[in-house]
Image 1 (cartoon, rainbow, N blue to C red):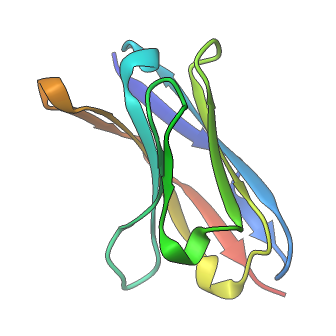
Image 2: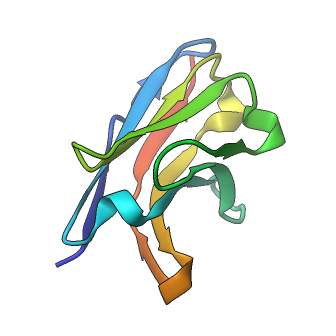
Length: 118
């Protein structure tokens, strides 16, 4: 069955870094666009970054530009999110999503919690 499993979350101090990973299985990972979203307590889920199937096109939410980097390794069926200069406002559950728009297919992971606190 289709699975997206996020990892790498945890507690980090302000100014610190984390790298999240999302491993996909049960579908053709390399043809799906991948995205990271996040949802902070009491807030709506928001897009963090996205990457095209081959990795050549990336997009970021304005508040993440210059701090976060999305990448993927299709040989490992994994998408990454490198997060630098973290601040308390980055505290959220981070989810990965796989999209194959031409076929209306979307899959979500269950999320990993990132807490930025001193």
